[in-house]
Image (tube, rainbow, N blue to C red):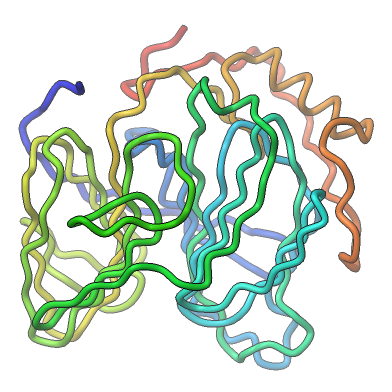
Length: 308
């Protein structure tokens, strides 16, 4: 069981990162001062962007190892293709979950005929040692559990919250949930004391615990909380991330999550040589080449920054 720390909240700003040819995202995780929240190790918030008369999202085939990707849309549509032969269109309220395991490749793009706005999250979940060498798989879930109370509606995207469990396959105790607050509404949500949590705003502003939250930043809430107070004057769409602290050291570089520098080198070599990851068919564009490895060895780190 995780050691419970005193509750603390820290507001962390994101930074803009180009993604593909047409999209810029706000990267909220990892950060220098916060590498993970539970097994959640990567958070990109994109949009809302006006893509009327424009191509929209276009991210060519690229590889992943040792992680799961979770795609959540608020507006727009995204077409997923992968090296398993999957072809899935995701719409708001649905979730795509791709488990890379030992290796998979995929592409993401807006369909030729697409809605005028795109807005959503791309998240990664680090796989534990027991699952990271497994066979890759892809799952599309068009229906997710939703529950409501006065002024608030919650959709459980991954994991479990308040007795409601998402059908998405996960390998560690965690939660990812969208929380919608009506204007001038307040609520209190239950939390797991042994989890650490973070909250980001996708639309609107809210008072979360003791902090004011607006799009573009991530509020880290620490561990030891049993509930969380929320309030919004103008209405807000929030996303809650949580989980038991991940106690395995990780190396993260480009699109790979591994345990050693040498694993990264091998994954890069396999992608460049056309091994291991398979082929993505149907994408109208080139596969993404891997960048050059850093000149110094990448050290595996625990969530608290300790190196191996």
